[in-house]
Image (cartoon, rainbow, N blue to C red; front, top):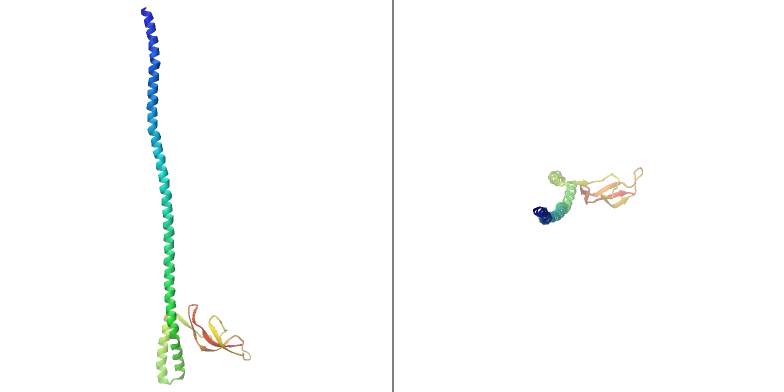
Length: 194
């Protein structure tokens, strides 16, 4: 009988071992599942942070683009404003100088008809007037004996061309014109041969 018990005992032990092993395996599976859960949570948090970073980078790129556009627009505004101010100054001085030009014309007429003493004084004043014009970058347009150019001259009279003289040339200048650079302040009034 003892032998039978001995033989039976191991059989009972064999039956208990699989139950213990399956309980241990279940416990290990539960532990593995619990260990997997934080991994999944960590992975999900990592993906969420990646998405937030991508969104922040896109937003930063958008802000940078808007900033660069704003900076370019401001630079263009500054340049336009500077050009407008420069043009306003040039136009303002041109208006004033245009009103002064007849004074120079009258000085030249007076110079042609005065005595020697007066002539010296008028020449000094005329020199000063011409210096002022030169400092402002203004040049006289005096096209006598040159080809008529409607960009700088205004024909107020015409005269048939003499023999040997080509038509379309300025025969006489009644009133000198003035220009600043290529901008005409006053057209020269001339007599043209036809």
